[in-house]
Length: 89
Image (tube, rainbow, N blue to C red):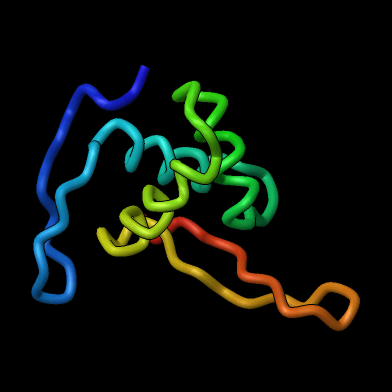
């Protein structure tokens, strides 16, 4: 399972401690997914991967974004704005 590797990324002048396995998993998930992924899609998949709750997984989405691995965009579905993520690398 995840959580074995811990590293430090510098983003925006700050240093973030992050569990490398989970952050890489988020990037790989977004990179290989055939369609757009919302934060809920990512956290649900990550929760299944780690065996943790999806609420506990939200910070990995933010950390992957802070590390420059994924990037958010807005889309509109039925008049509602929704944030989806794309791989940067």
